[in-house]
Length: 173
Image 1 (cartoon, one colour):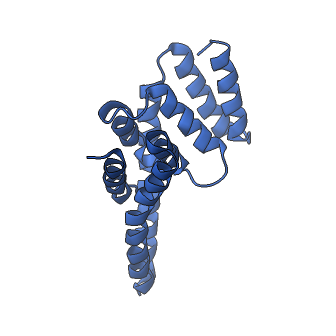
Image 2 (image 1 turned 90 degrees about the vertical axis):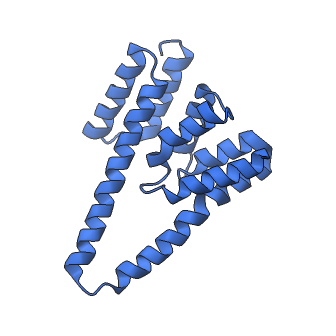
């Protein structure tokens, strides 16, 4: 199977499960792109994730960068389309269904349940990714410090990314 076809099929399947956004799928995306297909190594995956988080726009940029790495500009386009089309169709029909519900309590219940599910998936994903990319006590400490700063302050996440990059360049993590 060609790399582009494999990229399209596998990312389309991920899109159907992308409840909570791309961040909820990061552990599975990491496993696919690093362990199964060997499209990237761990460091490149972490770099692509950091770029996607620092750049404005949607988090699906991680997938676009993976596609670019696999097959250049065409790979980036294929990956972006593959990760968007299934979930977009499902959300379209789900939103129509929810909009047609007459009972406001049922509507709110579905919306709150979906929100809780998305938050839980993103938190679980963050935990899995931190275990896969943190290979030292210093890296785990930096992760915990970043979580504390994000919860207790109003710092922009870009500051934390810069601090992590500087610590990495200096060899502390």
